[in-house]
Structure formats: C-alpha cells, structure tokens
Image 1: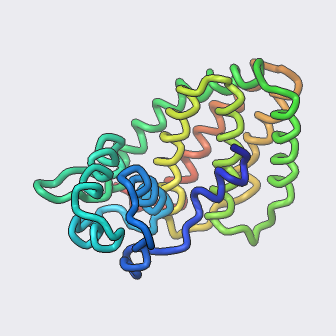
Image 2: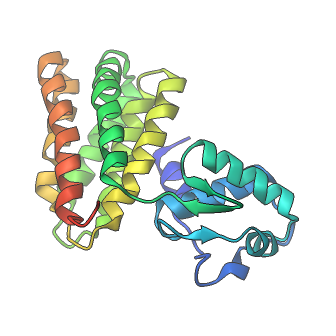
Length: 237
C-alpha cells in the first residue's frame, strides 16, 4: 500500500455529529467496516473526545442492526479509542496521563524501529524518504495543522514499514494515530520549521547510516512532539 493510499484512508467525507444519516450505505456495512469508519472519525476529531456514542443512532446511520455496531465498538474499546461507561460507549478523552504513557512507549519502541529501518530500508524506501524530505521542505507557514500532521504521519508510516517488521509497524502506527488526536485538538498553530527539524535530521542520519545521530534525532523528535502538543493545547488536563 503506497503513502497516498494510507493518507486517503484517513481523510473523510462525512461527519457523524452533523450528518449522522450521511453514513448510511446502499448496502449494510460489516462490523470491520464500521470499526474502521468510526476509528478514522475519532482519530481526526470528526467525532470529538468525550462524546457519547448512541448505539441505536449509529445502527440507523449505518443501515444495520445494533449487533454489528456493538462488535465494532467492542473492538474500538479494546484499542482504547472508546471507553465503556455503563451501557454506553464514550470516545476516549485526551488527558496528560494518556499522553505521557504514549510518549513513554514511543520513546522505547520508535528509536529502535528507526534503527532497524536504517539498516533494512530498501532502495525504493530511500526514494520515497527523499521525496518526503522534499515535501517537508516545501511546506510554508500557510500549511494547516492537519496538513502538517498528515505529512508527519506519512513520514513515520514509511519508517515503520521499512523495519520489515509488520507487528511492530502496526503497533507504532496505532500509537501514532492516538497522538494525532492530541496534535489536532489544540487551537494554536504548529510551527512547521521547528516541528520537522528533527525529522530532517532523521532522514539524513538514515542516508548516512549514522546510528548515533539517528538515536539522538529520534529521541529529540519525540520530545518535540510532546512539547508541541503541550504548546498548541495547554488546557489538556
């Protein structure tokens, strides 16, 4: 799957909160499709943190019975996109504790993943990485937070894929997807140059096979991510 397909997967054309019946399909959706659709809307804040999901309304919107929706919500609950509150499901809130836990895991796994990516990257992977570097350098201050975050996701997705470890790539992509909600939730503008400075360092370190530099840049990039989230959304509690 190429980067465009991954990016397109996370761009939506309907918003459940404003137009719930726009979700209704000509043919009923299965639980996996409902799960994917709801997850993507949660990631990109089209269904906001803390919102209670009405099982009956969702079933009507998707044109299915309550059972497929319950299966989808149960899986979302297992991955912590939603939490169970009695008989209801609520979209997981954004909290400092949650962000800290995600950051601690990334700080361990992502650095090693980047090192494996450096050692295992294919020639095509290097071509894609250099193309992403050009895209990053072409960003201007007019770029929206969403555009910035989408490009960062593509950058990390490429590196995760180049570890040649499917299980690790899936785990890290899920962690990063949780991070996306924090980035997008803040009212302040992300500064392009400071946000991608370490990403460009990571790319250069991979090109030169410099593990020491790569470790330092990867660690700094995770710290910048955390600082950026706190800077654009200081009200997270």
